Length: 264
Length: 259
Image (cartoon, rainbow over all chains, first blue to last red; front, side, top):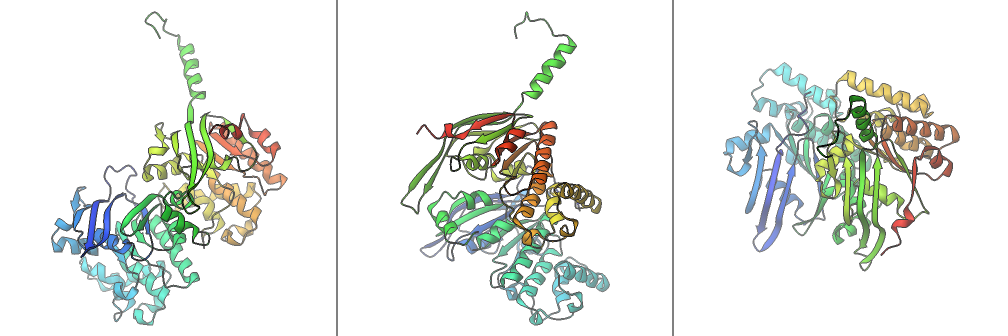
């Protein structure tokens, strides 16, 4: 697999001064960051801190009231995602982007087979050869450690951990450059979580994926993310290298967060 | 150099260049201060390091001395950008020759610095679930190469040699280190962080839980790193290890006095 050069001059995603409010309540206040190819960034904070609002705003799912979200397109130009046509946005979401939902039912088609779930994005790109689709689906089921004999079963018959892994396969099959994840491991058993985390860690490295992952679990951030952003009441209160923020937190809220958990 | 200075003959020029080469600054701390503010402990302030001025050149092994709690580990963590300096500057000569000032660098530059320039052997291994000891050790060599089978196999071969030198029994190589003993985990940690020949290496008590044979291996690895021109800064619990590797000692208590 070819890997982009480290010193590319433009970020993959540029977020500048975005705001979002719901009525009088400010959900997101002046968030800015650049994300580079291959970088994994975690966003942490308690529920209601604006993490998911931020994720939806930068993933083109919920337009911010102010500010700019730009994505580096195939012509190596930063393009405002909210200036794209709907068709362009849909194409991006199906090919170069992925979105892994907290609730797997939001990211999967629960009544079609696992194989069709994995193949759908490829079909969207024009792949019609049934044999090839099935073969790719089998390969991806193996990569996410799902027994390929389950290819014709629907996700309804899968466990929670299997559903999350299927969701990941469904998203990664088109070799995206940027993946958004909303609490992908919450609600899973600890042992199932460890397996999923290790899988995510290996896939993000091997595929050189850029990832924005929202989590409330600092251990997840420590294991997966290069960078960390801490949010409180819609404001980014601290950001930096993951181990820097966790080992030498500067902001009172981050210090509270770090001291409140058992060994992050 | 004035206009009247005679042009040096070629041997002289060569000597001059060599001189520069061996005195090359690899790491420099300028008036570095580290203070911790504990906001949830009534804003208690801990002054750990004051006015640290320190310069390390290529081929030097600087051993930090001083009683525990004096900020030796803190100093290493500042150089690894694990801690953020309260004031001052920390300059690192990177593998490509450029100088990076850590207190102003962005995360992307720091990630790259850790990949290519500064290695850090901490006191404990942070375990990665489900990854074999062999791959935990080989991983740093694969971060910037392709994931081709031949590259992976080559990295594993170097990892095998290192594990052998550190007396990790072969039956453990394919197992994840989570269940290993403290001493075994420490050796995996040393192997993982010394496998890549980075120009700057930080060592935080790497021999604390090792027996004599493995301690000797670590001393040998340090000498090999110095021989290839690396710069090392280390903390050694055993004074005989410190003596065996040091080209210079710095007493960190001097950074505590002035308020």
